[in-house]
Every structure is written in structure tokens, then in C-alpha cells.
Length: 450
Ligand code: TYD
Ligand code: MG
Image (cartoon, rainbow, N blue to C red):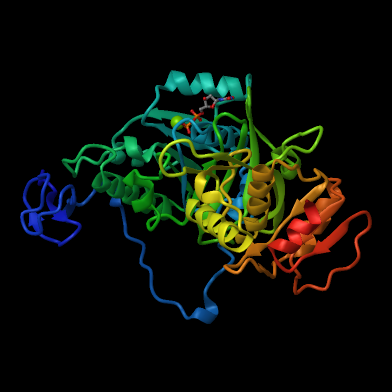
């Protein structure tokens, strides 16, 4: 049989090399060579190519976007209302965060509704998966789930025919015989994904690809896959806590920004119906350095506790240790506090955490961070019936906040008595049992809480 021809192309300058080497001959960059196929061998399962012809936009058929429920309503919400057949969904996350558990649990739920699934285990044995399945749903019939312990992409793809959905766990463990590179390598990941996605689209079934990322998101795998798949989901959370957030960062069939909230229990994932209550710390009395941020994730309010600790820097330059927020933003906010409010933070170590392992990218968290830092610095607690929001500008002014009404409603629902916020464009109805304190700048906020 003819062998597929490959070359190693430098991703920096495009120079081609016949063999892998650490350094590019042409531009001198290190570790930039990626194996690419020059001449593909026709795959045996390519089958008959469907004769597709262009159709006028006006008569394009949209009825095909029917969605299949996954059995997890939180999962369906993030997908935009269920699984779209023929879609490729990447589930990324750090090792041990619960990717295999979530997909196996979903497979069991779907199998319960008479769907047939193929679970390709590239990392674990069939026995290990069976043990996990027993833990999640003991006694559940696994008749509809086919397990395949296989790392060859071509072999695995040949079993896609008679099932309604496929799980590949994980894409980094798979390899294609067409390439000489090791599994997990950029070229392998890309090639295997292409094989699975092409096959799944042809058969009009969804394929779930598990992708590992490191703490810094550094491994090439999921990044190169983002372009190839229709939906990118990530599981995040603090492994010390049982809460997990499912987030979509790309979705060709729905809005991104939606989150699903789960709790990891002894028997797999449980959907969390009241996420704000789950993420809030429970303090009997107010403590310095803790502030509740009235946040939004997608269309859903999510209240989280932000904690800060300011302590005199003993040695060398002061530390800025941040978890769940952009570190540069914290440095900026500390500079605003130093310059505008005269708070000498340049000789203080600062530690800022978002409780529960959530990553916040909303600018409206600024005011909560600032108040938490000042509260810790002055050692004065802020009343724990207060929630805050607002983006802080360079002069210390507060910007108008978007979507305040759902946050206010959530605040009352959770039993907060006061919310501190910038002026908003929305005309707000008066809401019972909650005082809204509108402030113009950080000084207004200090006056309101201290
Ligand atoms: P896993 O799904 O194997 O993670 P990943 O595939 O992302 O690497 O989940 C790993 C963790 O989940 C492991 O530490 C054990 C825990 N776990 C539970 O707490 N409850 C359960 O029911 C299961 C199956 C796992
Ligand atoms: Mg796993």
C-alpha cells in the first residue's frame, strides 16, 4: 500500500524539512516544526461522496437543526438547547477536573433514552470505565454503550456507523497511522480530529472530543482544535471544592457566555440549581477583606465572594497573587488606589481570590476587588448583607453597569439588603427589601461602606 507522504513544516517561516528536528534550518527558531500531510492515501471508509450542490440561501433547509437532549439540562443550556447532530464538540479542561465523568454520565443518560453510543477510551481500560459507570449509576443498563479501548484514529472511526453519538476520550491519546509524530503532538491532534469530524459529519452524528489543558492552558491540543470543532466547552473549577463550571467559549449553534453549574459528588455530577447560593461563602459575621460581587454570567446572575489580603511586603518587590481574575487588572486597580486614594499599596503584598474557582472576566468586578483590598488594608469589615458591582475607570470613577435589573432581583432572592452600584442606563423599578446605593466613584463607595 502506498504510504502517506508527510513533511515537517516550520510554523514560524514555512520552511519544509523531510525529518523532524529541534531547530528550523531556515529561521533558526526552536520547536516550531509540525508534521503535515503532503499526499494523503485514500481512506477505505471514505465511501461514496454525497453529491452536494449549491442551494439558494432563500430555500436553504434549516429544519435539520433539530437538537437532542443530553439528559443534563445544564449541559443543554450551555450548548444552546441540546446537542446538534453532526456537530463536533470539544470538552476541554485540566486533568482530573471531571471530563470523562461528565461525558460518561451524559452517555448513560442518553443510553437510557434508547440512544446508542460509542465511547472510545484511549487512556483507560474498558474495566476502568465500567467501574466509573457503576459509581455514577449502579445497575443502569449499559447495553446501549459500546466501549472501545483503542488509540488508532482510523480504527476507531470505522466503528461510528451504527451509533447515535461518539465520545473520544481523549483526542491527545489518539494517533493516525498516516503520521510519524507521537500522539498528543500538534500534527496528530489535528489529523485525528479531522478524521473523527469528517466521519461524524458524514454520518450526521455528534462527536465529543475530550481535550486536556494544563493550568496555564499551554498544551497545544485544545488550541489547535478550536478552529476545527463547532463548539468548545470548558470545565473549570477549583479541585479543592466540588463546584464545577461548564462554559462555552465557541458555539456555532448558540450563544456563548452561558454557564452550567455542577457539583461533583460521590456518584458523579449533580446539577446546581441555585448557583449563587453555592458560590457564596458562609460567614456568620462580616470579615475584613471579603466582598460579594453581584456578577452576571451570560443571562444568568452569579454572585461570588471576592477575598483580598493586603499584608506588608517583607522581602523584595511586593507580590500580586491573583486567582480567578486578570492579574494585570489587579495591578491597575492597586495603582488607582495608590494614586487616587493615597493608599500605600506599593509596599504591600496583595492576594486576591475568587471563591469557588470561578474565572471572572467581567469588568464590573472592579469595585468588589477595590473594596475587598481596602477592607483588608484598613482591617474594617463590610456588612455581609451588601453586594457590589461596577467597573472602575482610571480616575476612580465608576462606569455605567449593564444589566442591573437581573442582579437586583437575584440580590433580593438571596436575601441581600443593599446593593452598591454605579448609575445605570436602565430605568429600575423600586424593588422591595433592597436598598440600591448609587455611587459616582470609589470615594462614594468608601463612604457608603466604611
Ligand atoms: P475524571 O472524570 O476522571 O477527570 P478527567 O477525565 O477530566 O481527567 O474525574 C476525576 C475526578 O473526579 C477524580 O478525582 C475522582 C472524581 N470523581 C468523583 O468525585 N465522583 C465520581 O462519581 C467520579 C466518577 C469521579
Ligand atoms: Mg479522563
